[in-house]
Amino acid sequence: MNDSVATEQRPARTKPVRRVGDIVFGGASLGSAVLILLTLVGVAVFLVIKAMPALTADPAEISGGKGFFSYVWPLVFGTVVCSLIAMVLATPVAVGIALFVSHYSPRRLGAGIGFVIDLLAAVPSVVFGMWGMAVFAPKLFPLYGWLEDNLGFIPLFGEASASGRTILTASIVLAVMILPIITSVSREVFLQTPRLHEEAALALGATRWEMIRTAVLPFGMPGVVGGTMLGLGRALGETMAVAIILSPNVFTWNFIGSGNQTIPAEIALHFPEASGLRLAELIAAGLVLFVITLAVNLFARWIVDRRAEFSGAN
Image (cartoon, rainbow, N blue to C red; front, side, top):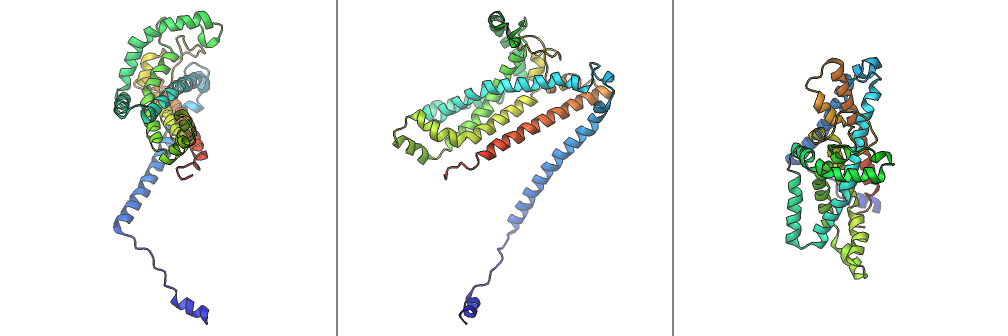
């Protein structure tokens, strides 16, 4: 009896009312997500179809006469090494600038430094390339000579290039180019650190650096990784700056000597006059770069997801 009365008195559930604006926004969001996925799949299918002639051609017909792998390997090496060196050089500097702007500098000084850093992102890549070739590369030649004289027994620092147009020069220029991206993302993430976390660390007797090390850096690490991967993505795909600085495609382990090339620069330099099998080679090289970039982004997503449990509510 009581159960039946309780059942009768229980209010009937009503379906939530969906407004027209919610329906339109939800449909637009779903359509945008599907469109991005279809675009990615379309690009991948296009690259595979157009690259198939180069992947299945006789090795003697490929540039260099030793097959597609022998042709693309120096390009992959130059692309990955150049981007990794740039990331290693830029990330500590960018994180240091972001910490100084967000937790050390006065507000006006920090705003000015942040504005100058952001301006670097507006400089065209061709300007960086011309600066690296005409100004920066000659200035680095004395350093390369010192490395050759003192560390020449290491294959990475063999005979130095007299022009200074080396993969190390290109990497330093790329580091300057990706610095604003990593700095901006890291700065915004550090500023979002919960104030209670910082005050709790200071109240326990921590110095400012100990507070940053125990509260700010753990909270902002996923954002730093994300900003670093964004910078790495730009470094992997950079074309003009690298094409202007580097020499033709010759594989070498020597970072201060002439040689090496990247996939984007190779495509930019040879695509306009390419046709037939040569065009398929360049598209196949672009497919390799597509796979590398996709793998890097998936790896970055995996790193960020591993730290997703840490939040301001913890």
